Amino acid sequence: MNQQQHETVRQILVDNARRISVDHQVEIESWDPVKPGGNFLPAYIPYIGADYFSPRTKGCRILAYALSQNISKSDGFAVEWAHDWKEGTGTVALDRQNQNGGVAMHPFATGHIPILAYLLRSLAFGRKPGDGESIFWEIAATNLSKFSFRSSNGKWTTDNYTSLRRCWEWFSRLEVEQLDPDFILCCDHRVYNIVQVHVPAASKKARVILVAFPSLRVINRHYRKTRFHEGHLRAPQIKERIAAVDLDRSVDHGRTISQVIDRDEYYFAEMFARMETAFSVIASSSGAT
Image (cartoon, rainbow, N blue to C red; front, side, top):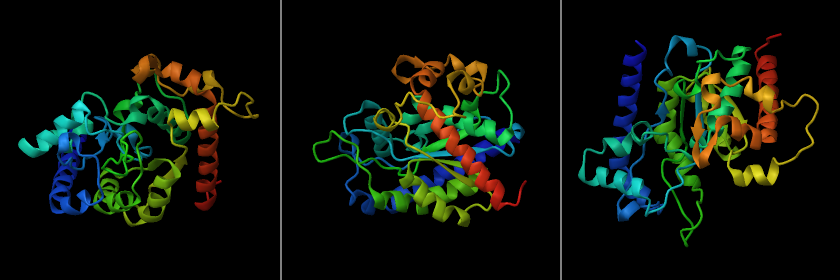
């Protein structure tokens, strides 16, 4: 049932992304998105872990949203996606999060979103994971904006609020309905502000959790303190909430999950504290004791 549901949902989302990309291409191009190799790049569906619908994720299915793909018009993989859309079946372009050999989503590839999901899961389940309970196969992740935008000189990624709002309407509402998450992890307040307002129309149970965007630019500017507060988790305690199978997993920039935690210890401690506060509010609002 898990595999059948996984494939059914994946196909529903691919069909929707294809239809929207065709029907609204003119409008999307009017926003001046990045066009790899000069070709239009369609929307795409979320990464969906192979065990996302497994019975063991019940009560803690996590869907993570970041902002947008950080691509440029000359990136080889993006040129291939755009070429597939123009000359091929389009399936590789539409399903590129699941067919790329690795999730094409920077804060996921660096290990930050999986670590945050681990911390959230430890709160939701009230326990540490078993050695083999890898979060990588049990979560879903994507960007709220399905299109990329760059500054006029091409050096910087920019955010397009029209795309963020329209992509919720066109794609994310259906993603939430089909993936039926218990928690939506929003990386950045711009994502949170849109999801928090609109998610009740798509899900009555999904609880929305805000974390600071896990880029090194943000972390280096705001989360490099060495003076930890009482109650903050330290790196060894954070690692206790990571399955042993993933601690030595390699991520982008030649680091392991364990090394990312050591480097960005204060960021993860602060985000866990925020999650604890959010859980207290959830419990209070639901009348739990």
